[in-house]
Length: 200
Image 1 (cartoon, rainbow, N blue to C red):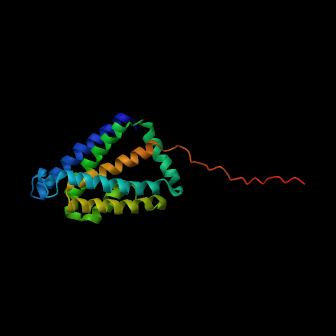
Image 2 (image 1 turned 45 degrees about the vertical axis):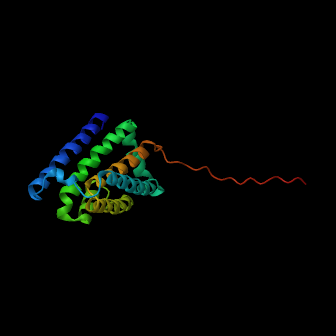
């Protein structure tokens, strides 16, 4: 995948998922799309709470990804991301596209029908993190189910803007970490005990 394709996928997520989510909301929830953003909690509070939640949970996610258990998976994804040569502006743009499009579709349109936890598991499974053939990756997937479930509660109690901000923060933290990840396992030097020679 090259950077152009990556950005086209980002735009497709932003406009395609948002449009699909908006259509579901207007056709089946009997509300106007933009009413999704009209909540009692101010937008700035939602953004602040979302960014805080996203940053904290992304830090936990990275601790799992950065463990010895997921070394091969971490390096695999790092190679893909680093081939794109993403700048911080690129990371912010892609994270905004994914956070907005996916949250409007999953939290705004799907969650009211399937509930918070089924939607969370579906979301994580679609991203490929729940794999019966890869139990190590599934540990990360299980953690992400909890994280995405939390985003579902943010959406229900604060608003969709909080969910978008949290998703955005998670993607920024993890993409940036992958960009900075060494592409070979870090080997620790063996500790050699040196005994002082004693003169007779």
